[in-house]
Image (cartoon, rainbow, N blue to C red; front, side, top):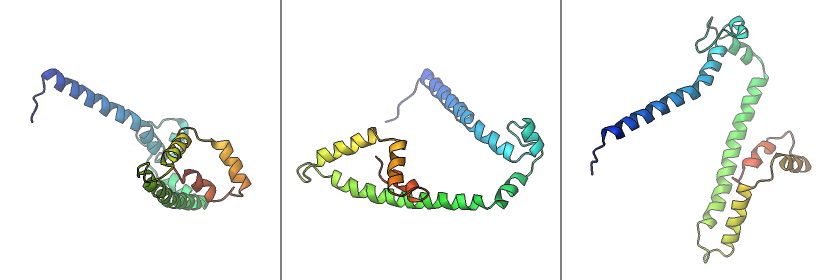
Length: 154
C-alpha cells in the first residue's frame, strides 16, 4: 500500500537526514584530523598547523614506524587475539545457546541457568578481580589473559 506523505512529513524527513549527515561528518572529523597529521611534515604537525588536510605531504612517519620491530609483533598479537578470541567466543556461545533455546520441560534447570547468565552479564566482577584470577592462574603476560575474558559474553 502506497502512502502519501504530507509536505510537513517530507520536510521533517529531510531535516532528519541533514542532521544525521552532519552529525556523522562531525564524528569523522577527529579521524580525518589524525590521518592528516600522520601524512603531514613533522614541523607542521608539531607546530599545530594541520587541521583537515596534510601540510607538506609525506609518508615518512609511516616509514619510521614500520622500521621498528615491535610494530609487527604488536600486529601479530592483535591478529592472534582476534582469531583465537572469536573462535573461542563462538564455540562457547553456541554451546550455551543450544540448551538455552529449549523449553523448561526439555531442560531441567534452564530458567535458573538463564538467570545466572543474565545476572553475570549485567553485573560482572570487573577488571581488578579478573587480574587477580589471571595472576593466580599464571596467565599474566600470555595470550590467554587477553582471550579468556571475552570468551563468553557474560
